[in-house]
Amino acid sequence: MALSVKSIKGTQDVLPNESYKNRFIEQTLLSVAENFGFKEIRTPVFEHTELFQRSVGDTTDVVEKEMYTFLDKGERSITLKPEGTAGAARAFLEHGLFNDTMPQKVCYVTPCYRYEKPQAGRLREFHQFGVECFGTASPAADAEVISLANEIFEALDITDIKLYINSIGCPVCRKKYHEELKKYFEKYKDELCETCLKRLEKNPMRILDCKSPVCSKIAENAPVVTDYLCEECSDHFEKVKEYLNELNIEFEINPKIVRGLDYYTKTVFEFVSNSIGAQGTVCGGGRYDGLLEELGSQHIPALGFAIGLERLMLLIDAQEIGYPTENTCDIYIAAMDESALKKAMKITNDIRCQCISAQTDIVGRSLKAQMKFADKIKAKYSMVLGTNEIESNKAVLKNMDNGEKIEVDLENFADNFQEIMLRDEMKAFEELMKE
Ligand code: HAM
Image (cartoon, rainbow, N blue to C red):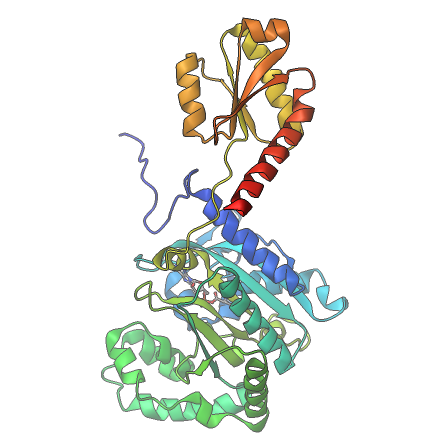
């Protein structure tokens, strides 16, 4: 049987002519986060299954239905990370980062895996850019983290996106809320799906984000958590709103946001767009003051968010924002024969050592085909080497943008090429200013 060369359902390849877009996105997000004092953390793609059961919560859709879990050869239960927070929190504790000055601010770009029904904006392997801020209970941190997400969308010129915030309280106020929710959903016991029936006993709040149409219809009129907030949670939420107003960040309170993961407390938020279909939540996050304790540490309040990179890129396309142009080749050096190729290879290499991109013929093409290739890769300059050029140690450098040709010395060409490029760029800039 022939080997299957089809990718797995719900996964995506990023091809060479597209990958510069992903790189641009990742670099932009990381650099905005850096401006806010976040430093990159990298954690493994798989963890002990228990980490996600304990943090994300074993009554969530993610843990109950969507995790890629397997036994390794040592019979340990391993799970491909369905999200980035649990791994970052585990690393924070394992490496004693809590001994350092607080808050500890980390950010990451990571692949995530969820066995969901694939559709536009919903994949089985997707990528998150996330930030986590450990060691602060202040509502100012909530506002700062939200403003970081907001700044990311602004940096990318994204306008069609709306911020929704809510507070889902703490274990104290949630006790009363759970009782009320239970009372409400018990009336619909005969209609709820099997999973939600179990949730009714263990964690009724999870019924609120069930994807079944029947359960979500019933959930529409369920009591809302904001009516049950204790004084501390209510004050905290008021402060967050005040700070957001101070920062001129527009938001809408949506008491229906409960988030799909169990670790959240107090502030939760989502940035949602209407331009990319049903999977419009591009960013989700909130505070998780109890998570680190749940993982065995002392009480360390924390918060963060994650942006789905594939959804973000769908949004960029939907808004026709575009990307900075792809980095092309600075110079293509064509060779007419074997000895010219040797010289071309040497010069190409010297140019690359100056951190300038250069290519030559490694295929054995005719001169015509080499020049066609130079056009195709959008080389900014080209040069042809043959017997005459090798003998005289001089060649003609062609600016492929404006067609200008100059004679150059091949001796020390690599050293001089950067200067030539700069001079041409200045000239082009001056021309532009004249217009
Ligand atoms: P989440 O809401 O589960 O939160 O995921 C965050 C983002 O990941 C979503 O808003 C969405 O853009 C993207 N996403 C989720 N599932 C998929 C999927 N199947 N396909 C494509 N994109 C997807 C978290 O994961 C939390 N860890 C966020 C967080 C960080 N909270 C605090 N710190």
